[in-house]
Length: 267
Image (cartoon, rainbow, N blue to C red):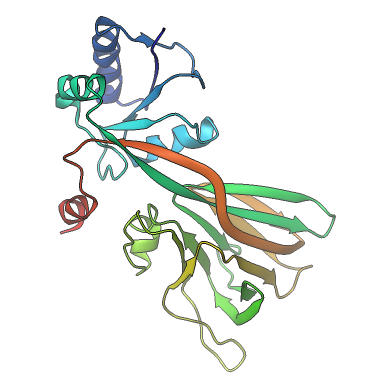
């Protein structure tokens, strides 16, 4: 049986050199390195930083096979190994000395006044905001319960794996990826006599969704940002944010520990 592996990489010199070297090593070990992305491959190797990892996920519609990252970037939360550990990677993989970490995704369903419905999926987060120089006014509900009239720059809904990204820079909490929840974090909220907003994050269980209705549908421009991929909307009727069905399977070795990585990256 052919053992097919995908390799994706960003365009930095180190990433491209690592891709060339890894391709030769995998072929020597009996694998076939696909020239084009193959959705039937047994493994995808992503070379770069977290940005390159997210780009691979979006360009290939969150592929179902296991994925491992080689870190040639800076932070590298998704990336498991360094370029000088390729021999260890191939040995551990061929000996089945690994485990799979399942990462949840988040989905925003946007309905507009013309009846159109569009879905956006993020591995890290979904961000709802207005125009860059204007505050946005939103009616927020959780499940069937109205919660608040929000005024501010926007709101962010993060998965556990996204809790260490933009969410963390906004003052949100770091969440262990083994927890099945979504975190709603306000972006520059304002509290006035007209608008009363939570100023800290809200944690939602997996069976609840977040409902968003613009206060002024006709005159509000809304931007939906999923992992940095931005879409502009006019005349948004409502937005529903919840867990998506897509799961990312991240290949991890026995030495991986989430909280050790948090300590290494942030402290």
